[in-house]
Image: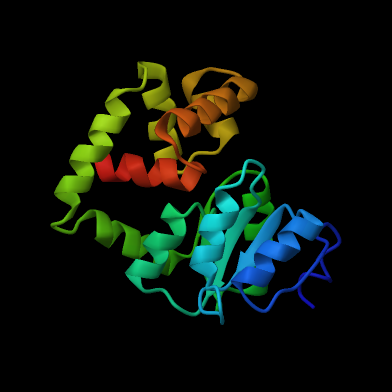
Length: 196
């Protein structure tokens, strides 16, 4: 009901599990998917991995009651562009859909706190070394763009900050995704934070 009431959002399908989400994506080619984690047969994390591995992958927001570290990290590493808890106010869910549809990332405040804690954990040393090695392969300008993405800047903000056009920023982000073998901006931000 919430989504159907938004004039700029069209609900094209609803599925009961991850397998159905994949099939419905084939049939309807949605721009954004709201994905739960725990579902019968194929869970939302597996479905997210499958869908984000496609050439023309939809954006995915995981919307769930489960905010355990493992779920958050698996969803983001699988390519989810957002992670919201089901107690997120309806207005924020709508804003998140629009934001993710525009290629930006969205995380609920509780998830952001968990990611900060994750970066600070002792096992981060191995991730840090790997992330630094991957970022070292980038040009100086690409690292600047990656760092700005890691700070949560939009394309327009990066363009203003680095004195370049928005299309140039988009081209840099696309090159970063290809060079780093990542699916979206959230994964770039995770890599940048892992390297810090």
